[in-house]
Every structure is written in C-alpha cells, then in structure tokens.
Image (cartoon, rainbow, N blue to C red; front, side):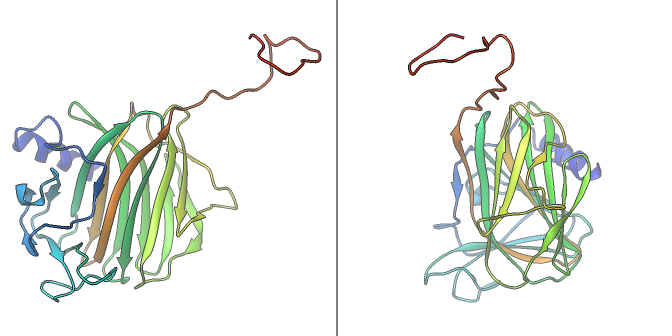
Length: 249
C-alpha cells in the first residue's frame, strides 16, 4: 500500500533504522504547546514519525492555542492531528511486545474529513508488518481489516471522548478491539486475525484523511504476558481419569 511505502521512504530519507526512542506511554505532558513540522521532530521527544506534504500536528491544552484539549482535567495536554492532504499519518514507536499485549489510546473525532484510521505494526529492520487496520468513517461507521474486510456492528458517536484498545496475541495472531471497554464485533464475532505475520507489535500509527480533525491522548502499549499454548486435550494425552496434582505430559 502507498501509505506503508511512504513510511519506509521517510525512514530511509532520515537515515533511521528504527524509532529514536521506544516508549510505553505518550501522554504529551511537558511538551511545548504549538504546531510541529513534518518529518522526525525531536521536540516531540519520543521519536514520532510524522509525514505529509500538508500535515499538521498541534500539542494543545486548555489555553485554546492551536485547538483545545477535550479530555481534561485542567492542565492536561493532548495532540490534535489534522491535514488537508489525501494522506497523513503519525507513528509512535514503543517497546516491543512479542506475546500478549494491549495497544490503546484516547481519541475524539468530530466526524469531519474522510476518516480516522488506527493501525498496529511491527517495525522490524526497515520492514513494516501491518497487523491490523481500523478505519472510522466520517459517519461513524467502522471497518476492521485483518486481510479481509469486516464491517463492524457498532457505530461511533462522534465528537465525544472515547478509549480504543486493541488486545492482541502475536503468536496466535489474534485481536480483540474494544471501544470504551466493549468488544467491537462483525456479525457478532469479536475475535479477528492479523493482516500479516509480525515478530512483535511496536508501532501505533494514526491517519487523519482529507480534512479529518482528531484529538488523541494517552497512547500506550503494554505487555500482558506470554502467549500461552492452546490445550486441545488430543494425543499424546492418555484417555482416562487424572487425580489432582501435576501430570506429564
């Protein structure tokens, strides 16, 4: 896809082999309020990659300079991402999660422009492994793409604060997406796959398309433990009764 190719061009042009800082949380506190430029802006501190011919990313608070933070409380800072370009994205690199994990963010999308898109990647030595794509259209309809297109049963309420969380298992290539704590489903099914195999997840990418205007905060990626094997009770287990205790296999 062109979007992924442009991300690679950006990294190559900047002479990077990865993100300059790996993080577990970006809450935008302590960053200077105002607009930041395209490319790798070291003032964003955490190695964010932002690219577009006409991109805009503002760090905002309650002062109203460049936008107004919708999340609160008083003194909270967040990021406003918006663009007049056809393609604009901003990516944040995190500590790698190779087992089970949760990628999450708070966001507020007013429904303008074309759509707001959130993607999970594994960035591995110049290769982008695109694990999933969630797209929220301007009318609130949503689609999750994991190699197949899944129209979601839910519709987003626009212009209010939401929390989006992706609970994933890299080894099993499974994903559950939750909006405000409730699993998103397609045809009633809450579990999705991965678009491609990835050795780990470590990049959150957000795209504001064609005048979309979105506020985001508390970008986070945490490990929740190793991937556990699926127990199917098939051979080589012996048929019969087992008593309490530890048995092998």
